[in-house]
Amino acid sequence: MKYSIRDIILESPSGKGEEWLKRQKSLEWSYEINERLAKDEQLEKIFLKREGKEKDFLDAFLKLGNTKALRNFMETCMHCGICIDKCHMFISTGDINNSPVGRAELVRRIYKDPRVENVDLSKIYSYYYQCTECRRCAVFCPNGIDQSEITRNVRNVLTSMGIIPEYVVTTLAQVYRVGNNLGLNEKAIASVVNFLEDDLKEETGKELRIPLNSKADFLLIPSSTDLFVNTDTMKGYTKVLNALNKKWTISSRATEAANFGLFASEKYLRDFGNFVVDEAISLGVKTVLWGECGHGWRSASNYVRYELAKNGIELMHIHQFTLKALERGQLKVDKNKNDDLFNYHDPCNYARGGNLVNEPREILKMVVRETVEAKYTKEETFCCGAGAGLLADEKNWNEFRAWAGWPAVYYSWKTGASYMISPCAIDKAQFPYVIDYHKVPLKMKGLMDLVGYALEI
Image 1 (cartoon, rainbow, N blue to C red):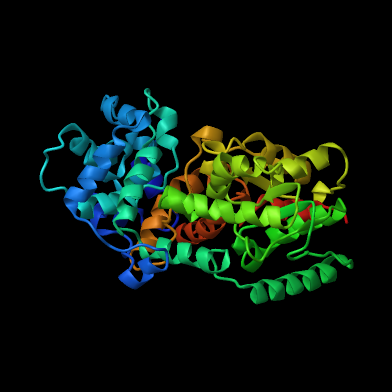
Image 2 (cartoon, rainbow, N blue to C red):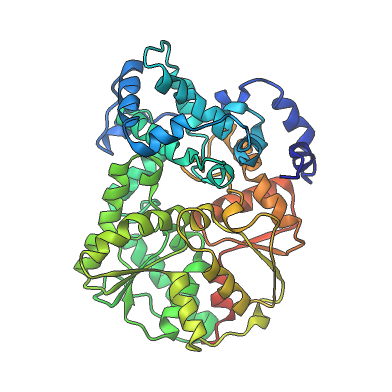
């Protein structure tokens, strides 16, 4: 990679780059920047309790070493260092433990010498919850070592011991309670739906319905933030499905494209995926349409898809569905309504975990006047810096993630685009904050937002 980490940081229009670089001079300084641990009463809400000590972690991790993939990742690292400056967390912190090889070494030494003493669980927790599971390191590693998979294995063990951030636990608990991350119950969702329908009528002059808990052919799984925060994304879905006259619905019991189980343990990933499967069966749908969420799509594509297929139900991403309709001429759009320069940012989990790279680009070209690519795209895309549970709003953490997301925003800014487009719920929460912190002249939108703007109803 021909870029200077120092230059990327110093070029921040915020003027805070020099100060940030000074912090990087302290060895292991980011060890102290970690998310609050969940309290015992919070753990109970996700059927956990805090138990176990260093030896329990050691025993559980060594058992994982029996799996072929983890054994390969533990044994084939050549310590060549190629991965180090490819990692946005290392770029933003300069802390070697916040690089793929450095993070892996924290547990590799345990794997290589089971008799090791003084397992520092605090350090393992801190650095393994600063990995965003983005998989960029695996793209560049000569041996294909995937730190994301090491992280997921370590977090599985930590979670079983009740060592898990408060932010992740409260999010998981909301899904168990009402079926979405924001904690919106059926009454709240119905109220939001009514508001959005009124808003759409005012915009278009037409009755565009958002069916709720109805028998249908298509079940749309939006991110809960599409209903409450990123409402233009939800309007985009609604306009497309109404324009195509599809029999569709959303469900108040499964209104979450995200799946924080991916960030904690396999149990939660499966539980939340099965909520969607059960609801799809209950509503008698033929197809589940997944909304804009990167890690949610990775979970759905690699788990939910196969559980749905067992019941004769198809899984499609909303982009795949929309592109087919555009290519068949079933949707009329006016790209002049999006008359700016747009840069498409690949969410990590689309490009490196969900096989969704070309469809979003094709849609974007059909609904805007002009697009431009950043220097690092597709499988080489930079992470937003807030995935895998790092979106917590905590003291000292916010500035940390503002720099973690800076490489991605930096390269989008350098394209000269007016808009940075990313169809990922976490990106939509993270990038506006990073853009504002660094005082960059960029605006942020989801892809289905632009489809909605261009669509002629």
